Amino acid sequence: MVFDAWSDSSARAVLQLMVESVAEMVGFEVAVLSVVIGDDLVTVAYAGPEEHRAHVEATDPVSVIEPVLARSEPWGERLRFIEGASLDELEGHWVEVDQVPSAEPDAWRADSGLLAVLSDDGGTVVGILSVDRPSSGRRPGERERALLERYAAQAERAVLTAFEREAMIQRINHAESARRLIRTASMPAHPSLEAVLRDAHEPLVAGFDARGTWLHVFAADGPGTGMIRNHEGEELSLPEDIVELAKAFAPQLWAEQRVFLIEADEPAPGVPDSVLQHLGDRGLASMIGVPLGVGAECVGFLALSRRPYQPAWSQAEMDFSLQVGHDLGAALMTARALERERALVRELKELDDYRTQLFATLSHELRTPLTVIAGNLELLGGLELDEAVARLHGAMSRGADRMQRTVDDLMLLARMSHPRHPLVRLPIDLRAVTDDVVSMLDSTARAKGIALDTRLADASLVVPGDATEIDQLVGNLVSNAVKYTPPGGTVVLSADRVDEHVVVRVADTGLGIAEEDQARIFRAFYRTENPAALSEPGTGLGLAIVATVVERHGGRLDVASRLGEGTTFTVALPAARAG
Ligand code: ADP
Image (cartoon, rainbow, N blue to C red; front, side, top):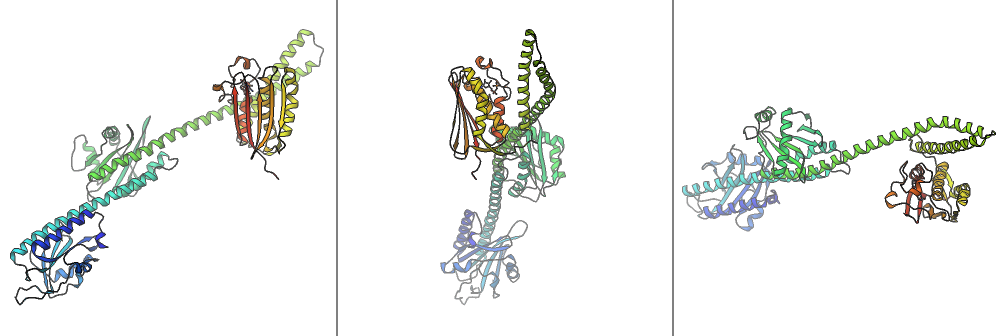
């Protein structure tokens, strides 16, 4: 339906009214208005008998006007009269209404036609208004022609205004779709600053009909980063003083929620000549400066430029640009926070790598001299020693043993954290592991007066994993339970099958672990400050090993404890698939 060619229906309503009043006031039964949209001549308004309405809906190339005008007789600035010659080319923009001509010499005939050619300031045709069927039955006289000429001038203005409105609406629609695009383009799941700066350019240029964009994001502690690009997306550079000026100005604009318009040929307060000069040098007519931010914080700014032949910035466009400032501000803020987080993770990782490296080197270096010491102590132990020397020998042997255990733990931790030591999984039966652990610790438990029980389910307790690591995992939990449980207590080691997991549980009735310590005990070298726990020998490495082993095996680790009542560690490891 041609009447829908324009998006702004209120503009069409104005034109319709215009046409109706022309018909009525100048005394014609029929009036038709067609306007030029793009390369087409499109009928947009009609006044006259209903039965003719269907004939006045047409879209034709603009060129159809030319031959008709060539055959016409000028009746004024805009009016053209036609008679005798066919008006076929304009069919649909004009109604041929049969009228029985009177005998008068100035009678209106069926082939008479009167058009007003509407043009813009530059003389380009923007539409035609045609009238037919004068109520007098005659050609309009001097007075009516003058009146019609006046109405045509008004129609011309109405059409031009409608065009301007339409162009503006189109631009706003563009800006709106640009806003949507920016929202989606600049907010992927994990946006990087660079991606936001890069991806916003195209929708901004398209949406705001801009010649170029300049997007800058402030850094918390430095000059920040910016990107200036022309229409084709090439990166450009700007003089330093302009960059500084924009940076200083943006927070103020954000505080006032305002967009700043600079026009090359219009000096304005606060705008140095160098800026105007720069715009002129680049062949730009105008620029808007838009602050970007979130809440009270201005995070950067955006500048959009236009060339002289492009339309001036409308208020609506500037308002939209400020909304885009909010969207981009949010996107940049998220990206900046994520970037900081990534940097922090990198630093922590480096620190962790360093620590692992230190562990590995230290334990390696200690191992050889320790072997020598232990070997010699063993040799000494085989000799007849007098009592005092035997006591010293015993103390040295216990010390060497402790060092040996620490070094072993450190080496195991370092090995597990090393990327070149991936986990090699073999089927490990937890039934066998628990048997080994219990037979190793049973005498210690018994000597301390602690009952060490095992409860194993009948189901398969096989997990895919590393034998040494799983051994350490269960061994450390049970030896801790025995170590931190006073005489008379109980330690229960159970293993069960729960869905796809083998669940190992070590429960004791010992010292318990304070709530605030429960998250920290898995860190390397961490020992609680509980004096009763500290009186037991330990390095603080056992649970760090447990946590690392569980993580490497894709399992879960939990601790439930109450100070003075006891502790239960629960480990769930993915079970081996049957068959
Ligand atoms: P270590 O036993 O060598 O000190 P761990 O890493 O094995 O080191 O344990 C860290 C700390 O957690 C211990 O110092 C102890 O305070 C506490 N802890 C571990 N297991 C238990 C337990 N079963 N009952 C009470 N406290 C425990």
